[in-house]
Length: 307
Image 1 (cartoon, rainbow, N blue to C red):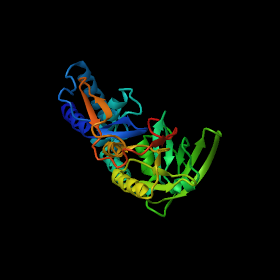
Image 2 (cartoon, rainbow, N blue to C red):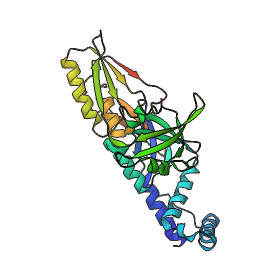
Image 3 (spheres, helix red, strand yellow):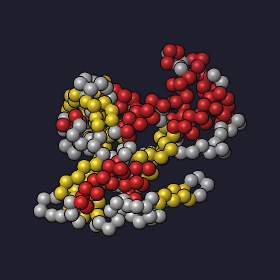
Image 4 (tube, helix red, strand yellow):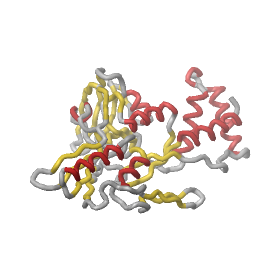
């Protein structure tokens, strides 16, 4: 493969799978970027330098078996994105990672049931999913994964670590966990299971006329489930809602807008976005909210994305 072909792959893949995170209502929401016509690699000295580096690796690297076009291309794109310095907001996802992300947001997958992120080269648990094997094993927000089945995973891409942790229901995985709060390290063996996210659940707070509404993540279908819950709450004669977004790691932008729209009048601004050209676009409430007149209190904590 020559550098010109690599350039075309850069552009196609970068446009297809670079995701940015946008803060909204205490949650990080994934939103796909659009390809910009001006995005291109210059053919001058910088382009020649990249071409020379590519060819030097092809000619001289000892382990030729690992030099697949896919490995080098994905690595190069990841390097470009990391060079932005936009840690936590812009990242490169391979097609396999996009598929895994879809599993998470669809609300069903097999694994230990925890949301994670990378912090300074270490994969950190953002929050265990409610009623998951991770929660049952005592894993906590902030716990750091140092090894998987005895193999050091520090400074390993988060996608690779996640790939090692995911697995068939019923199988076991042993994680070496460091807990900063107690400065202790321990091995935790977790039995994987089929994880089915319960998007929304609610209960009346004892001795009150208030409903506690828990949204674990902004997964596919959560706004519809919230509408159903709010209708049940009002039919029960309850007069207020405590909306619990603690340890909510984010999810789909469309679902977050749908959730917010249940509490705001039509056309209320939910979020504002500005692109590289300075153009501003608005996301507004979609109207017909199910709880426009109900008092609401929102709970967040350090595990709520963007909190």
